[in-house]
Amino acid sequence: MQVAIINYNAGNVQSVLFAMERLGVEAVLTDNSAEIRAAEKVIFPGVGEARSTMRYLRERGLDVVIRSLTQPVLGICLGMQLLCEHSEEWDTPCLGIIPQRVVKFRPANGEKVPHMGWNALHSLKNGVFAPELEGEYVYFVHSYYVEAGNFTTALTDYTLPFSAGLQRDNFFATQFHPEKSGKVGEQILKNFLTL
Image (tube, rainbow, N blue to C red; front, side, top):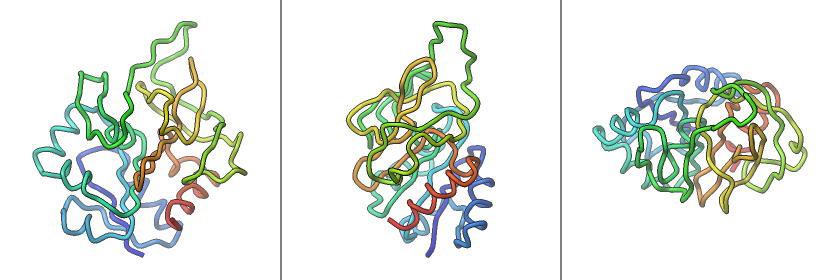
């Protein structure tokens, strides 16, 4: 199986490559449109900031490439947020693949932002989330979140319930980092790779 990991000037791509290696999967880190389109699976990872990342994608035509993909695609963290319509981070129009909004945490009880740490998954639906993952803990690092909505496939709670996972058609996404979430994250990546 050939997996393309989209290289778009964001952090955290190396840990996704290592996760693929641990699973024995051949993966290529690339911003080449033809390589991305030819891959059996595509991972859209990232740690970074919405506005500059969207600018980078547009300048290289990767926004058009990502929207055109028909194979399974997994957005991780910033990658999930950029699949949405709009982010409050610098008032940024995103890819518009999943009609959800990305909003900033506004803690009411002194919670720290960014949200960093392990939180439990609940209210799981299809996609990459097997029922036995209900209540399992995964690792988050983020200051913005996707509101719960029609495309939410998993919830978690930090200041309020929010989308830990999303899916629309062939686009799957996790707000948390499966590549840093131990055996649970490994299972979620395996579930994605077997779609």
